[in-house]
Length: 282
Ligand code: GUN
Image (cartoon, rainbow, N blue to C red; front, top):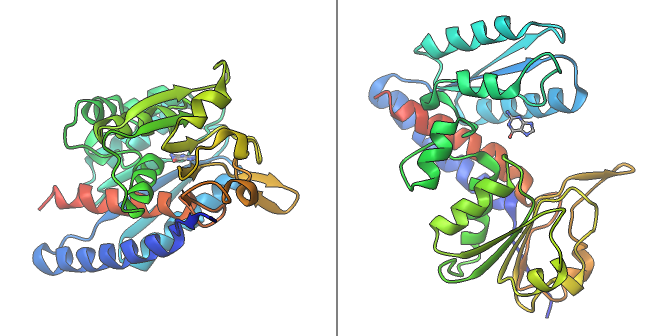
């Protein structure tokens, strides 16, 4: 039987309506308008598109958004100065430095300089540590969106075999730990893993973040599994996931499409994190 599609766009739209309402209630209650500042360094065209999309989404739900555009050749000290002044600005509840950064800047120094209470990307080691230990924190947006998509199936995560392919700090590692927090039994696979097919075939929940178009086909997927495709690969003028959708949907129980699965959820979780950070100021 063909899989059910997990519609990230529809879920995202529903969540954005709810965020908009809560933003309005916060304004009415305390006069606080949540504010997000995005720092964009240089002229990377893909980053410019992402940042514009974030700004548009903020506007949709009534969050103030500001973009600071900095020259490609800016020094690390100058960038750290901007972060410091945003840390001190009480109208700014969320700070996001768009990655990647030019080579003269160490991204670790930049992430570590952001006030953890304003770290709406959830990348600061304080937030990572809080997340791993089950404390209240700002969670990274893509993994947070993935958990919501899995919950959307209505099937429990507890006790399930979850396999994550990919171990990046942005997706693979945090989503693995979040699945663990939700009581899944988690296996993390990566480019050096041997016997990938057999491991994936045991997964009730399979999260794929490898960056190779159509890599995961039906040989890797258990009957009825929930498959989350984090891939966004440009093939010609098309956006293609890491999962061979047409083939895998014949076997999976639930599957996310690309586009329209994980993608829309990432920005929605950024909006939610900005609201969450602003609510702490009440
Ligand atoms: N570049 C690509 N994805 C992301 C993200 O989630 N956060 C930031 N800051 N930069 C990115």
